[in-house]
Image: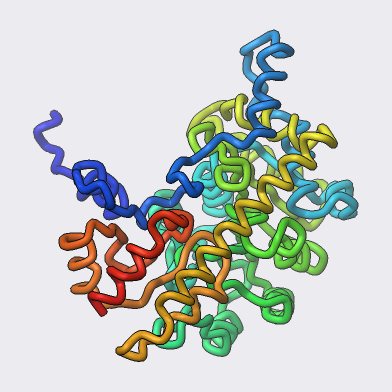
Length: 396
């Protein structure tokens, strides 16, 4: 039987990770992997999370299932973090949240529910978008369409083209949007642009599906949630997939959630039943550990304060690396403009060099990035930024 299978091509980012591990050069730099790293190149456990973990070790007295919707305190507290503590939508009966195994699990459950709603549902994704968005959506049978998002020449959002494309999207089609810290571009919608997207959705009747995986790493917890809160306050229907991998550092714990806003409470109950049905056939029950940690941190005023301070330090470190890299690359002899790096948000940006230059950086200098030139700013630190900038200036 298995001899009928053919090898699946290696994911470019995972392949890059393998090549990096096999490279014996001591000064190698990994800008491809999508995880946060501190100045020592480590992905640390947050102190607030570790404290919650110690407390959980003392208090936990069972390992039984929590049910398909997951931990209710986690769902409530994470929803308040994303939508706002006093947001009336949370108590309106039109809102529900289902804990999911990471952001990918949340996206998949959301897509599964969408796929059940009509015969040929379509989802529109921006170009470019996170590499796994399209495969996740395609697995549910959704038709994939695209709209323009990023101008590779100016390194800005091509918003006029984007909004014109959104105006043509049919009623009840789905539009996938990044809540903040756009991956892979780092180019985020402004508050005015979010309002225009919201007005277009309201007028045309398409339904936004927001992926928010980096809340707190762009402009801070509150500002990063602006787009979602604007849409939630104005639209009858909305889907949000969230992840705690980055802002709580819980990568391997697979801690996420999918939230739905519906027209009324009866529809909400039906949607939740379909989300649970989808979860049952995909993974049955979500993992508890990460959700219990997030719930503990958000539910304890002291731990939450400590977590917010830690998260802010992460955000500021990434922004510092953006500022320093831009400063070191600007004024180069070729006159190449790298100023977009400073103004974008979150962990990622496109460096904007040629594929040949990417290959040279990897082969000659041990600097690893994907072929698109997406770089993870969190892979840069005070110990390697001089070497990195020197290498880039040598190849351009």
